Amino acid sequence: MSKPDFKVVFWGVRGSIPVPGTHTIRYGGNTSCVQIQIGPRLLIMDAGTGIHRLGQELLKGSQPITGDIFISHTHWDHIQGFPFFSPAFIKGNRFNLYGQSKVNLNFGDLMRGQMMYEHFPVSLEQMGATITMNELVSDLTLDLGDGIKITTQESNHPGGCLCYRVDHGGRSCCYMTDMEHSPQTDQAMTEFAANADLLIYDANFTDDEYYGHGDLPSRIGWGHSTWQAGIKLLHAAKAKQLILFHHSNFHNDDDMDQIEKNARNLYANLAAAREGMVITL
Ligand SMILES: [Zn+2]
Ligand SMILES: [Zn+2]
Image (cartoon, rainbow, N blue to C red; front, side, top):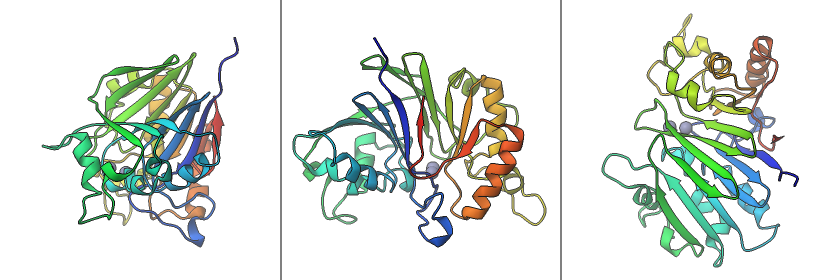
């Protein structure tokens, strides 16, 4: 039997805040959202503003829509698109949301929080689709059925964040956003990413920006990584392809071209994520 397609589609590639405009037209200005489509199974990594257009595209396909949405953490740039995800407003659609509690709030309450009446006119319960909340912790492996396996790994990020690994039919993709690397390549992260076909990696900063070379202030402790650390992790984990992700809101298209070029000089099988980019594993 032939394997179903394992397709990764980028809908939002930015960190922190959407930055649409003529300066970001080629890489895109929406915040984090990646679709992983394995045959008929819809998986969505994060619900930043990129999920809005994904929702519009899904409405053109077959209905009802069922999907699993994995939230790395509930910082705004990873959840802010959810109240504008049109398929979640349609009765008969079904979405399983997965994420982690924070401080004294469980994951469901964190997602409901941004849709409180003080912030948004419609509550999560009023959206229409059947939405279930699933609490996750680090170092879990979930069986999603149809041979799809999800593994979680806590990253080093203020307030906590989960990285997700998706395995299916001998193919694998790691979604590793909002993570700060350690000076020595992290052993747990290396094992998590071992032999992965694709790493989607937090490359918010360059090494110069991160370490504060020249006149730049240091960004150590801000919870983000660099493309240089991504390449190191890829080699340590013997992973194959690297996609730079969670681009800084300060990097315009020309900056991104330069970053991608510099990174490719060190490792060829690499690209900076662009909105609309599709990778088939
Ligand atoms: Zn972020
Ligand atoms: Zn964050």
